[in-house]
Length: 292
Ligand code: SAM
Ligand code: GLN
Image 1 (tube, rainbow, N blue to C red):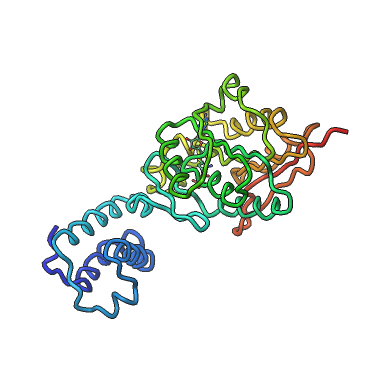
Image 2: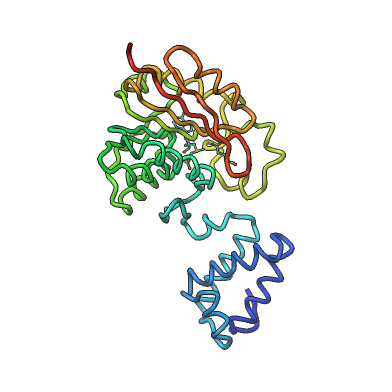
């Protein structure tokens, strides 16, 4: 590290010169502003007003190491160790997927659709950072929420996030592809999942910051079968949803029809697929029929 100055505006100029070829001017500027606000408590406006702000040696080092990670394409959320989801700040690390805006769209839809009649119990399959389970517990505090994942490291992060948000959630290590393990779960009023759904053939179109840093266990399905989890979850939901219970599944935009078809069998009603703000098919919902 050799910035040859400790004056913040000068250092910013140097760092921007390093990041811009990799991320473009706007994104580099935004990321740098977020780092400076996070580390030194200076908003963009405060930075502009404090043109003679100087960094200490340890502050310089802190910034230097963060920029080094960004230059190696580590996502900013992993550099900071946290991500925003709904109105929350969640801890994230390399064992959990960074919660996505499209998942937030699905959660907002679930909250709006169930506001009149809150579910009594909820299951989140493949909880990762706990984003979905925690957001739903906050929206429906009376509901008992269970969240499962196959990854111990993810469950640890999710439990820390639930505690930080004062949410009581039953976390459980479960391999959802193991029929015997899932059979032990009770019935629920609402089941939700954002399972792994990326195919290996999509790898070539994915950016380095996802491929090199996000857990492949969260992204890719085994045997390159994009519907693997949907098959397991639709069978499970038929037996584990209470009458009138609802299922919500985030999907790969290319497989909306297949997932809908899988659910449109006796048992499920009102199977619908929903587009995200970019017009891509993003999640599917269905309701288990009430007994006649
Ligand atoms: N729910 C989080 C979200 O929406 O941000 C994370 C979703 S991530 C796409 C999928 C999650 O499923 C990962 O946390 C991964 O560890 C978990 N997972 C992968 N295989 C699984 C399995 N066989 N059983 C249970 N969970 C699994
Ligand atoms: N939407 C995520 C991505 O763009 C993938 C999430 C998933 O596989 N469920 O990488």
